[in-house]
Length: 230
Image (tube, rainbow, N blue to C red; front, top):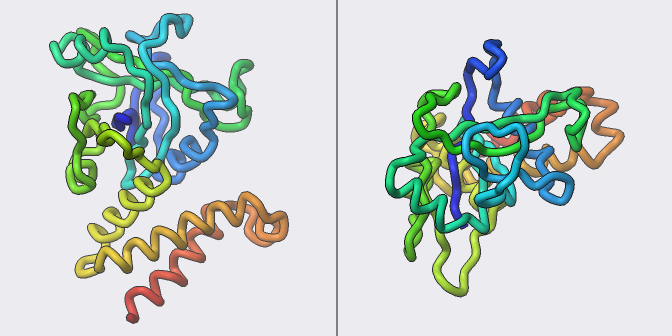
């Protein structure tokens, strides 16, 4: 399985000439909303009016450290060769708008496709260059150092997207809080991830905390106090 760095926080110019801004919470909502059973975003060349042909598919999304990462599968050998040859060296993600008719989950942004760009300049600057593994895999450290690192599990093994998301989030906490151990950062990442799931599932929590981010921040602050005191 390969991991591609497709988007990040900040203010970016879109194809309409607008400059919307995105926070880490916005990226988390995009990742949480993605469901390949509703719409499986294809890998395409550029930004076609139709998403055909597909050169691969996005099987899942995760957000961590201000970056949006895509897990991709069934990548065509032709696209891999073009990327290795340098013909397509940049990525640009396209999203359904919150009120777009084709949006499988209206009310928020939803990944439409991931476009590979040739000569055109991407609207989002600073993304890692796309690459695909050739018979080997990056270590967890390599993935953390470069979010767009290729990742191909060895024979008999598979990548766990949720586990990788926890790892990346733990690494982010270690960068933010000097001296925090990986074990404590991992515990904090688990608390935050569980808080997001609890809020989505509990009507009582949604009534008490009308915004998910407020509840997550509350749980994070409480857990952070326990982690730092230990």
